[in-house]
Image (cartoon, rainbow, N blue to C red):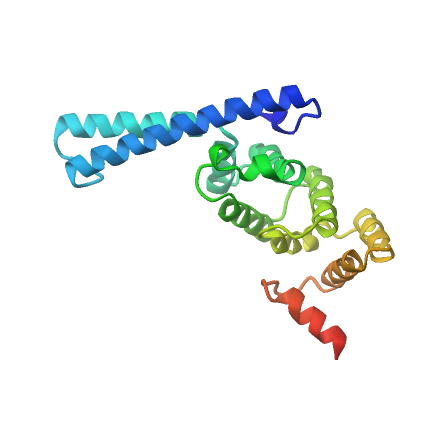
Length: 214
């Protein structure tokens, strides 16, 4: 699964093709369960043959879904188990490095941006184990420097969990850089690190910009 972000394009494309096949099979099983639902008129059929068919369809959907990155991300969201942290980082790094592949329709179960929003929201609420903080720092620094992508604002929720000497040095370097947009974003992040009590919403950035102009 970690080959989704491999540096070797051939290795990465093989992993992506495997992932897409699992997604397709999972969706086929979901459509199968929907057909049984339509036939029975309920998601919980009473007729024994339809109930058995529904069970098979749902099991097939779960079996294939659980082998994708989404199965591991969902397990993290459901159990909060630290064993799934590497897969959460993988999911976010996959978008950072290969956004077109990450968001392509044939590589996804439901909305990629909705899942990204939920994942970042959970990380913001929970924090993270010490060994994962360097990865979070890398992801925040990358988001600050790139053109804005849907739900990137949620990375601001992670700042209070990673603020420290290394993070401060890296974000300060961006604040002192040449790109004016990156400068502003970095200074915004520095202010958030200084004031972890600030409640961050989608409007926080715009309020911060407005306050700088007054």
